[in-house]
Each structure stands twice: as structure tokens, then as C-alpha cells.
Image (cartoon, rainbow, N blue to C red):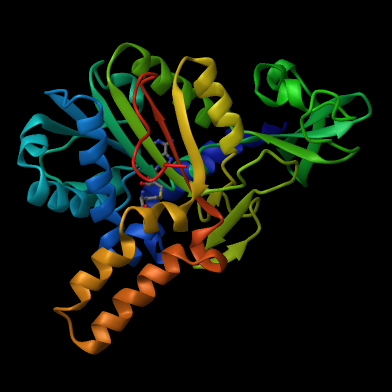
Length: 341
Ligand code: SAH
């Protein structure tokens, strides 16, 4: 008996998030600096105004972790846009009961969902930081004129005959062995990854935005262009681990294929902005101005720590380049903040 990688990954991550404090294993941007959540809050305010200030509006976060990003965002929103604060209600998409309890301490007025599907149709602004990278992926291996799919067996990875899965994805038209369709060349034995769960999430959002005003902001790590390669990684106890050992004890993630997601969203009638490197995005939104303003009221030591945190988020060799921001919105929406060319 073997199990497809995406099924293995879904099962392993569900067990992991239900039983572990992920923040003991890794640190995410909102946990690095409060300014991250604050400027994303301001992004939501400006986006809401560009959407024509729909009221009521749902402010949704997917995979809110400890609730830090949303708590920081709401604080900033309350300060600058009382009208938006009054118009919004809060929905959180979270599967882990353990993390829901953490989120409830900071965000008692939220309504929780296990998926996008139960959030009623209507105007919406959605944010998600390091959510898509946790969703399960499939891996296909180029063999001759066709593909095999990676499963997990008792001894580790095994290649099984591939079903029609790949044909349903954006990779299908791109991945000829000779790059005929203008897509990347995939050589014998190379792996391509397909994030079906991320693709469905983005497709469902684009479909919603076609009939109601809406915008979504994704921040995550991955290349701007689709490329072959194995990006599956595991973190356990704060260290990199073998993804297949001890399912449920490690956090499994994979690079987000932004180009594939953009294509899916456009195919459903959505408009897409980016991806742009996170450092550029945050700097355009005033990361350093806000950091400097806060630093003025701090001790020199704490001011330096805050500046160092901003640099960690934005400098290219740290989180500034591998992480990207991409937005999705209603087709007639003007350019969203941070995506100006
Ligand atoms: N956004 C937070 C947390 C990132 S960790 C931050 O930046 O700190 C990933 C988050 O996504 C966790 O809250 C995890 O429980 C949630 N998550 C993972 N897979 C999920 C799924 N399939 N559906 C809903 N939430 C999921």
C-alpha cells in the first residue's frame, strides 16, 4: 500500500498543527515585527476604499497562527479608519483546534471556519501569510514521454503510474519535455510540483470576486516563475528534518508556485497583481517609516531590535526576496497598494 504525497502531507500537517506549537519550530513575519501586521492592516484599509467601501464587508484571514497578524492589523485599522472597522466582521479559516484557542484569546469576536466554502458570499478582503505553503502538493516525475507520481511506501518515496491529475493543472500546457509550449523544460527524472489545494483555494476566491467586490493578499515563499524541482521541506524541533520520518511531528511545507496560481485566478476572471518580492512590497507600504516612528519612543536597545526586525523581513538575502506578495481581486479594481509598477 502506498499513499499519494498530497494525502500524506495533508494527514501529517493536520496531526502536526493539532498537537504542536508550530511557533516553537519556526518564526513567521508577524511574530518578527508588529509593523508587519500593522501595514497589512493599512493595506486592507486602502484596498477597501479602492473597492468602493462596501459595507458590510468580511475581513478574512486564512491560517492565522497565533492571531498576531490580525490583532496588529485591527489595531492599525481602528486608528486610521473607524468607518472600515465598523463595517467589517472577522472570519478566520483555521483547522487546528489548538490554534483556534490561541486565536480566540486575541480575537474573541471572530467566527471560525475550516474552509472558505462556509463563508457566505459577499464583499470580502482576505489575507494569508504562510498559509499556501502548508497546503498539500503532488509531485510528478518526468519519465520518457510521460510522468510518474511520487507516493510514500513503507521504504520511502516510490514512483507510481500517474493518473490524469497533472492534466488538470496549469503545468499541463507548460511541461513538454522540449519546452515547446514556452514553459520550462522538464528533463528526464526531474520533479514538478502541483499544489491542487492552493489552486482550488485561489480559483474559489477568483470566482467570488467575479460577482462581489473583493481582494486577497497572499504572502508566502516561492519563485516568481514556475520551475521544476523538489521543494518539499520539513521542520521539527526547530531544525530541518526528513519529510517522511515521523509524520505529524514535523511541519511540512513546499514552495508556492505563484505563476501557476496567477494563471488559475486569471482563468476564473480574477485580476492578479504581483508577485513582487516581500522586501519591495513592505518597503513601498512604509515598513521603515513606521518602524522609525515607533523607534523614537523606545530605548536605544529596543529601537535597534525593531530596526533589525524590519531588515530581517525586507533585506533580499533574508526574507525580502524569497518571500513574495501577490494579490487577487475583482476584475475592475484599480492597482492595489504595493503593486504599483
Ligand atoms: N499566518 C500565521 C501562521 C502560519 S502557519 C503566521 O504568519 O504566523 C500556517 C497556519 O495555517 C496555521 O495557523 C495552520 O494551522 C493553518 N493551516 C494549515 N493548513 C491548513 C488548512 N488546510 N486549512 C486551514 N488552515 C490551515
